Length: 352
Image 1 (cartoon, helix red, strand yellow):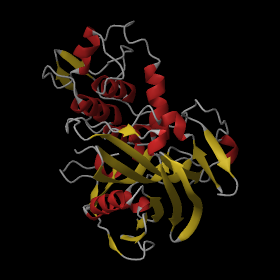
Image 2: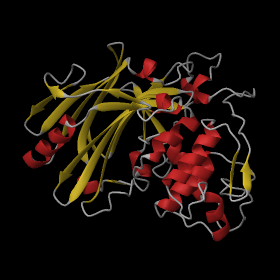
Image 3: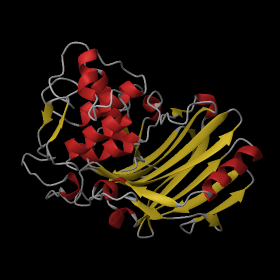
Image 4: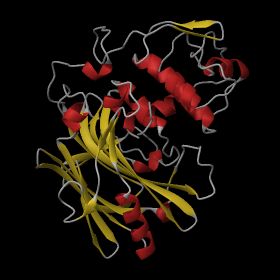
């Protein structure tokens, strides 16, 4: 299954995992990378962090991380751990003469269930705004702030800049009950390869919303490395965002210089975040680029888009096209889904 997909709770999970003392405990079974006698998304995140150089696993943890027993620790091992933890692979797997038992699904409530996360439903259909943290600490990656004039919550993009974007984040996101559509636009500019990623959908049991992230890396970077870095302050771009549901405006975020433009509002927790729901959401975005060269390069990347990826659809299927549906952009008014318009160095686009 191809990995595609970023988001709030994933970054907070990374912070939590980073706080683990990576040399204090010896892993006892394959997949149990942090040695807590359980195999879950925290183990997958540790493997991903090891692959991207954020942490270094000790020898015994590296043995546990090598799920496919090929002598290497890669994103494929992290994905295998995630699939076991989320129930995609419910069979008992034996590698390195150790056994990983079938995982019982946790739930967002006090009731235990063995149903996949994507079928979770609670009796609360409208999130309570008062339950959403209003902290505005510059260093808190799980920080929300309500913007009254925009009628939505936002997150602190400064706190996320050190994490960048890795394709595996979108696979891990479902373990936190994130279900969304995403599109990646790739283009070269100056001495770097750039990626602008768009998301829309369900964020946990509380929110629905959209995000736009701006990332880049050296043009000489090994193509096998899935990590893109968040742009520096001097590279940030003016990005605007509007989110609609069934053609009704939910909120509008005006253009601002940013590396991560976001907007979230309380949502219906019964939605799974699959494409049956997310296709009802429409995003209109405007991005102003540095110059004509950058604008032309982005439009070229936009025209190369052929599919939208949905992480919930992907984890519920097993074929090579899992999670993808056809979608393209053509020049037009920029407000009809699948169109874009160019005005100087500002590109306005819409997708659903």
